[in-house]
Each structure stands twice: as structure tokens, then as C-alpha cells.
Figure 1: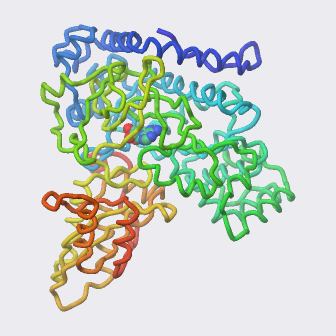
Figure 2 (figure 1 turned 90 degrees about the vertical axis):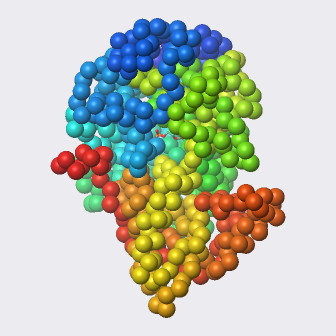
Length: 612
Ligand code: AMP
């Protein structure tokens, strides 16, 4: 099977064009021979893992062919392997899912029972992830030349990590990657020449990390050709940070010193290697930042920037207007599609509009199958689908090269690290083909109604959270008759808003502090990724409850029926996105309340923390 050529120094100096050509050739080959590559990937995974307990349990008996695999192995969700995962986490070193030792768990932002999912991974997967990264810049360089002549200002962060009872690290996939030698000791490559020194990225204090990365980005502003973060929300947070802290940053640039709040010695040392007193630059930055309007601030401060590299597909599309405002409409580039389970693919037409982004799944990354999703009135039927597929649905699974243009599918993956026919939970639509490999629009994460950053809240979680909160209203004989929610991204960071219509029978009005308690109870009831975003990452703002005039939800129904909804089938949507509906709700707000403090959050699974 073709291997992506390594991005490396050749004979002491880097041959950018040569390397780019090799990478593009690799993409041509694997997309042309997509089916053969897929068959080989599956055979390799099954041969390597022929003796693992999981495959034996299902009776695969060492078969490595596609037909037997499809006949015997069930398509599964996390819950189906949770007990295996728990055994591995608790220190069972036998070959349960994978013949190679599980090196760590990647904590997915997808949750199960309110807790993060723990995805097993193996050492060699790091190389596979690096391989996908190595495809990005050669693709980009076809559209924007000479990027190797400058730097990328990327705001990259590590998040807190924990250890399982058996001693394995458990952390987000990017934290794992940034801490690995693949990232830390990357060979000199003009395409991974970032303004942020490794030490600033690897600093676990998020304030110090952000401050020092921004400082380095500002003092090298002329060299910056592209800017970005992983998700749009993260990049906007960085701009917001600048809005708050530019006087200190300018002071540091003027004096060539670093603020005392930055105490991490390795960060200070790394920054001081870059920072030189530059009063002229400080004057310029001060003049720009103190202007009333921050429109176009990115192009004003980093004037050579060609594009913003952030994911704006899926729920992140809610941030496009803000990015457009700050950048005066620079191209927004979504380069890749990946998850903790597996890295999937790349966007081969990176300058396309965000609404047209299509990811080409790279057939060497894992073995991909697709479950057709049938939509009914804009609602995916899979929402109500049982978690285990019945035999018919199982037979409906199609291979990578057999998907049909325009059809939507749920992605199912088999990985080198021990997931077999695992339902990722993403819904994709086939937009076209690159040779024989399909290109997919990312449609949505199944069931997710609210998301600000990497949090993913579903309708059931929201319902339970509201149920817990309304108990505070009981002493006042007040009830929530209807509710809906909205992800408000006009604030930075964004926050969840709940619209409540109340029926108050008691004579004592409900005091504001009680509504604030309701806000906090909702937050305490939401999943661990949400609570981490609030309490640790500060990537989500305090939850807000807005009470609305009585009759508001009837108006909402009238509106939907006017738009063609059937009166018999109408159900209050538990989340609203459509601007006129949000406007309607906002126009009838009586009062609003915010969560007074952060919900509790500790790293690791609840049961591990109870053991201590
Ligand atoms: P995690 O497992 O926490 O790394 O999250 C992976 C999930 O993030 C994927 O399954 C998608 O739902 C979402 N995601 C990753 N990349 C993209 C992308 N390019 N566009 C939209 N959603 C994405």
C-alpha cells in the first residue's frame, strides 16, 4: 500500500516542490485505488488482531476478508464496548480489542451517560495522524503559493489530562499529539513554522499559553501568512483575548519584556528568544487596537495573512459572521475532518466556500462503511433508531466507493486501534468524488442540539437538566410550561440560552436568586465536556434563562404552521436556530438570569474520582 512520503529535510535542505509533488501523487494513488486500499486496510487490521478477544468473541476466527467480516461483525456504539474499555482502563493488559498495547485513551468530546468517551489508541496511530497532517500544506500550496516563505500563527492548546486506574494517560487527541515527538520534534519544515514556540503551546496554564502565543504572534506580525486554530470558536476566543489584553501585550513589545503573570520559566525563556524591544511596532499595534471598531482587525494587524485556517463546518458555522467581521472576509479554510476514533480526511479544495466544504476520506486511515440515513421533514430517522442495528440495517452498510452522490450516511469506522464497525455518530452527505474516493459534506453530529465549543448536548440531556432545575420553582407553585434553547454566539465565549414560559400560581414572585439556582442546576446536570468548557477551558459562558411572556410558545407554533408545519405533528423544538424564531422569542422576554458560578468539574470519570 502506498505510504505518504515523510515531510523531511532531504540532503540537509528542504525540497518543498518535490515533496509536495510526492504527497499529491500519494493522494492520487490512494483515491484512484480506493477500494483496493480499503480492502487491504481491513485485511491488515484483521490479520494483526486475529487473536484479540473481541474478534474471537464474535467468532471471526481469523478471517480477514471483507465478506466474512461484514457477515459476522456487528455495527456497534460505545456502550457495546464500554465494559471492554473499562477493563483496559483498570489495567487489564490482555489483548482485548487490539493485539498491540493500548498506549493511552483519547477522551472524545462525544459523551456516554454524561461522561466523555474513552477511545483506545496505540502508538502507531500517531504516525497515521501525522500522515494526514502532512497532506494539508501540499494541497493548500496548489491554491496559495509561497506559504513556505512565512509563518503560521496558530493558537494551539493542550487540555488537562488524567490517568486511568490502570495507569494509562487519558487526554484529548490533540493534547496527545502536541505532546508527542511527532509534533515536538518535527523536522525543520517551512510549513510547520509557527509563531508559537512549542513551550507556549505545551504550557498547561491556559492564560499563560494564550498570552505568550498572542505575544509571539504580534511581535512576528509581518511574517504571518496564515492564521488559525482548530475550531472557529478557539480563534475567536483568541481575538477576544487580544481585545482585553492588548495594552499589556503592547507594553511587552515596546519594552522587550514579558508580563510578570507569565511565570512558567520555559515559556518565558522561549518567548524571550523571539521578543525584541520594538517601540514602532508597539505604537502601530496600540493605534490599531484603540480604534473604536475592530472590524478587519486580523488583516490590520497581520497584513500579509492570506486565509484563516479553522473548522467552520458543522455547528462551527455559527461563527462565520464573526470571523468575517474580524477578517474583512478573508477566506475561511477548513482543511481536515478527524476525531478521537480515527483521522478521516482532508479538503482538497480548501478555498471553497464554507457551505461547500467536502472532505475526501483518505482510504489508508481506517476501514470506512456507511449507513444510509433517510430524512423525514428535515429530521434524520436515525435519531429514533435503536442503538444496535437490526439485520436489515446491517446489510444496508455500504463501502467507501459504493456511496451515492447526494445521499446522506452515518459514518462507521474500523480502526487499527481496536474499533470494529464503530458508529462515530456523524452524518455526512456525498458531494462528489476524487477519483474513486467520495467527498463528503459534514452535515451534523447525530442528536446534538446545542454546541458552543467542543461540547455536544443532546435533547435528552437538556430535558433531564431542565427537569432537575424546575424543582427550585416548586415552593413558588411555578411551572415551566414550555421551553426551548439557543446557542448564543454573539457573546464571546458563546453561551446556552434557555427560553422558559412559566405558569405561576403562587402569590410570592420567584426571586431572581431562584432562577440563578435553576441556571446552575442545569449546568451541573449537563455532561462533563460542557462542564469542562465552563469550569476549566472557559470556552463557554454562563448559561442564561430568559423567561418569556405567556403565549409566546403559541406564537412559535403559529409561526411554524404558517411555514407549513402540520398542526397535528407540531412539537415544540427543543433548540432553535432560525433567526426569525430567535428574534420572536427575544422580543417577548420578560426577564433574564445567568448562572452565578461555574459548575463542578474534575478530570477523569466520576467512578475514578469516587475511588480517591
Ligand atoms: P473528538 O472525538 O472530540 O475529537 O470530536 C470529533 C468530532 O468533531 C467528529 O466526530 C465531528 O463530529 C467533529 N468534527 C471534527 N472535524 C470536523 C470538521 N472538519 N467539521 C465538522 N465537525 C468536525
